[in-house]
Amino acid sequence: MKKITGLVMTLVALVTLAACGGGNDKSADSSSKEKTEDQLAAIKKAGVLKVATSADYAPFEFHTMVDGKDKIVGADIDLVNEIAKELGVKAEISDMSFNTVLASLKKGESDIAISAISATKERKEQFNFTDNYYNPPQVLIINKKNQGAFTSLATLKDKNVGAQKGSIQEGIVKTQIKNAKLVSIEKVPNMVVEVNSGSLDAMVVEKTIAESYVEQNPELMIADIELEPSEDEAFAIALPKGSDELQTELNKIIKKLSDEGKIDEYVQKNHEIAEKSAE
Image 1 (tube, rainbow, N blue to C red):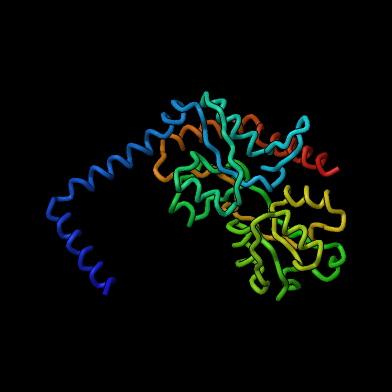
Image 2: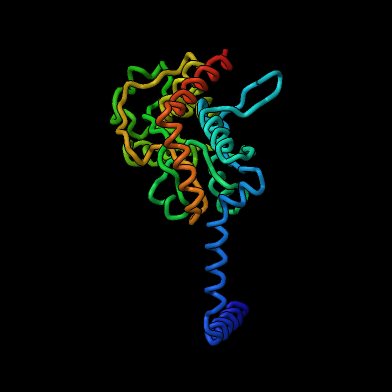
């Protein structure tokens, strides 16, 4: 009975709003458009660029000790710090699980999201994205004891293959290793532990990330199994839908840094930091 009453009241409300001519809807649309267009100005006025990330993906974003204190570092962090510098503001980094990074952006809790994020077709429907700033090859990490067993995608049939929850790697498992059993896990280090223990047979991860974890875990290796690259897997910065001015400004900065070779330098530098941290 409550459902029927609620439906009737909703219909009455809709009719009443329609009778008012729809002027309020236009006002709301205008306000929303103005909000996104003014985001770049608002960031500069606040003096802070709020950044959402998931700091468990070395060398792009990860925790390490600096002068005795835990600090979030990485190629993505260097990139946003340089972006903040170009904008004349300070970057404020918030660490969270990967599958809540974009949710934070959608709720307005952050200005941008950077966490080795791929601008998939589905994500583009909900967010704006900058131009790609890095296109990583994808690989499989396995335990060395399985080197002889896992020699092709076909040998992973019915095997448990891990991918970070909410990541592009989930799609890679589904489309390229179709006969495997996808196991979605929030944190990459947790997947590494499970491949070590044998509860996961393999995990899909970006090559530079894989190299860091293999360096830290001598019983693991990168499998000699090729995965097809895709432009959809390249990394981009996510922005609120409609934030065109901010998007344009960030694209200019990314192009400048890319042309100067800075982004590749960030990746290499932080790969070395990750390796030293593991020693």
